[in-house]
Length: 233
Image (cartoon, rainbow, N blue to C red; front, side, top):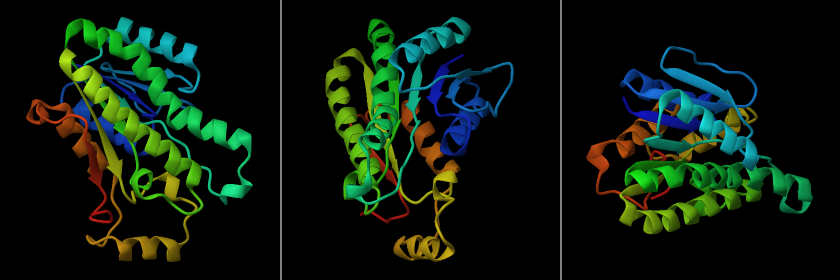
């Protein structure tokens, strides 16, 4: 049975990813911060702050002890702090970058050696279209996701000789907790700007992740795959 590790797996996009892989016969490990949302014989939740390098290393070792080597890694943990660029504090900067980019670095840093040893593995980062376009009042978030995209492309080149594929899924406007503070007017404007005329769902993203993890995507690496309803073309 294949083993997937998902960071930020307790809600929203992460939960949909966990459920999709569990439904398709995977052993599923996931990191959470506040409370676990999925349980089961083949599901292993671990409390872990992905910005803490030592905690990530310990948690990765724990899930490997439970289900064996990690075949698929999905780095999904992310936070956003909205505001004017001039209003952000150094603490805001560190927190957003430490979770959104640092979390990806920390977990790949621990997982990659095992994948290289086995000459096998798939790494998928959940990015954002704002990392490609920029976003007003979301400059830190956008910058962190731009870093994710660059890191994914670099890892793909570095790890391809070892048989490891690395890609990112770049969601557009997805109806998750991150949009909870958006007004009805803001949501309507985003829908109007999306050619497919709706918000995306966590399942839309999970389906793309599942495809990229499958053998059907065996010749795809180093790509930033947009799931945005045509918002960014």
